[in-house]
Image (cartoon, rainbow, N blue to C red):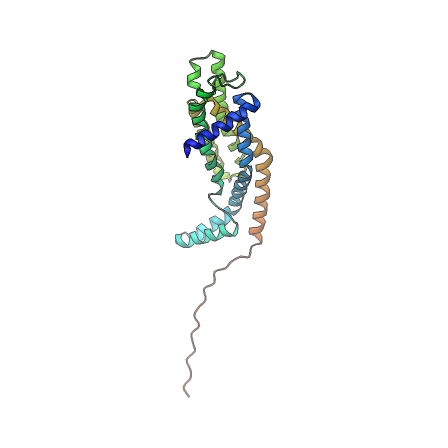
Length: 256
């Protein structure tokens, strides 16, 4: 099954290259196709995150109220999720769907592309899409090496930018933690990018640029609209009061 998927992705990439005439441009077009197909899921994921933020005060209230009763706390949280049609795992689905594509593309560029197109490049900007930064630094001139290194650094920067753009959607107490996590993740991506084929960097840089544009023009608008509607719904929701009914004792009958 996995080999079939790698072969399928290789054939799709080869078909796009036959249309556009460049392997690097074929990777960019393939990235656009994948991101367009994932856009509806990304919008749903963004809406789910907005509902989560709107429900945060109510969730904290439930956690404090039932701090001594974890079972009741979980029941009330599940009711809150059900009322808002919120799935805590919904935001992870687009990421999970992209993972097999990434690993298949990695195998395609590392194993398949050198056999079917040994000279595959990106308009001579990246002389080899199958080689990694470390491999190319030793085989190309100083200018070529710097192009690869800059592509790798761009990989880390483009990982960091969307996280910074989402800072204003985070709670104030979480912003410092989110910023630190973004810096650490960006450094890890740069380190990771050194050893992957240059075509993978091209795929991820294109995907990250798409994500930045999407965050600017789509994600933020969806986030604000859904969050406002969810906050209005929660504000208009009737307050539930737990009433403990006392058992009514019967009055003693007077003896006749």
